[in-house]
Length: 202
Image (tube, rainbow, N blue to C red; front, side, top):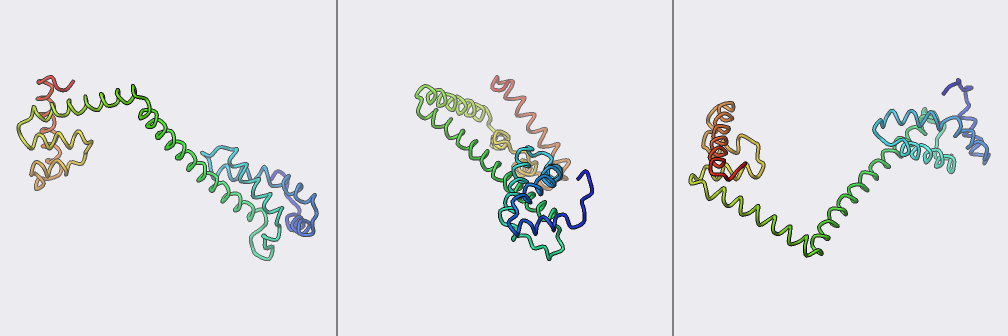
């Protein structure tokens, strides 16, 4: 706050609110709204300032509507009590916003799937794409004779990156990890070079 407050300012405002003084809520908001928004913004640096402002305003309004919720006998000053309420409000608003965005993404994804399902042309294009991918994969596996090569290719196509998975296929788990990596890389590179020579990979 720009100017130091008189000792007991918040206690006095609290007592006025308890007695039903409507002007006290306006005075309290003038004193605390801006400093609390700045403080909570620092605690939520990546959160939209409007969300922070909403959380602080809600904390002030909730308290002013029911000032008895603040126990002045405790060691927590009123401004710290309101800062805690504002922090919780903003946390809840952020969580709610994240849930809303997840729901929107999920709904958007379902809508796209529904559009494809309802549009015969889009559905046919998708089916053709899947068919082409399946045929390309089948051609890759058909070009390989060694079962180990096929299993290594399957793991690679599935996006597996763990060396241990490939090492198990190659029966080299007894080797040091660094040597396993070298052997797995050599095996993968050999398969890729072979499939490229066959014109099955770019």
